[in-house]
Length: 355
Ligand code: C2O
Image (cartoon, rainbow, N blue to C red):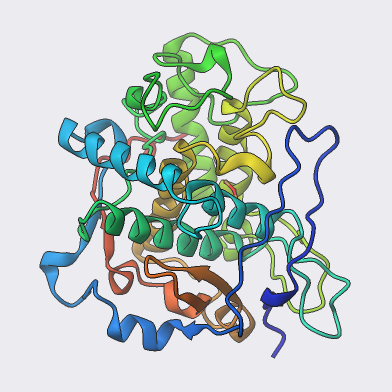
């Protein structure tokens, strides 16, 4: 098999961009002797039973949640931030998981150990981030004692959702983050195709129509797996063979739009090694994950890479809420219901826009 698998025990120093503002060691703490559970066995024993409808976690649009939900989210993030630094459930440890998988912390398996793994700009983008926020969500839910807790999704593809959900910008909240673009606070509308080198000036109405037409292009017109999901990336291949439409924009562009202006690499959201230190990262990726889910169902179904064993057998490792290290395969994440969550349905104002 030529499926990608990180050599998890060989995590090493990551490649940082020039003038990085922190130089984090991104590798997780390892239990000795090294052991892990396979996701298959894990899900069968999971405390979150997916067959029972009552425990399905419903991810809701971030701008439509109530105060009770916001309080839970704030509490969960606050607890994660307060855990000991080396606890895998600690908020910064979680951010480092992203750093290690994105900035070359893991070598590929022997004999390709000179090639570092990167989960961006390839067919690994959607499944890696699906699993990543899945474990984050379970950890958060367990810490607040609510196994039905589900992450919100930042619904930036809807008109009401095209700005930062305001509760992420309240100083003193655990959801607040300092390193963000000061001009992009609500009610400023996001440019889903933001060009960091030459930002465009548009009126609100122009921005809304532009965004909807752009969503149509990235979702509906990207009608092949190569266009939407990114290029195949197999054992021995150099990293970043080619990104899919939504990964490039709005995914990357929103990262750029949100990062601070006065930091060298638009930290934190604007660069991989720090992006997941901003609590909004997880709501952003919840929406990216939702768009993957929507895309597979557009016009009666679109084909992803599920007939390619190299994609299906690609592997990652994550810590769960009980500090077990779990080895997952892409094939285990293709049905969100089996993972125990669904997305609240909202209107898709871009679906029938004809650009
Ligand atoms: Cu791994 Cu939004 O990036």
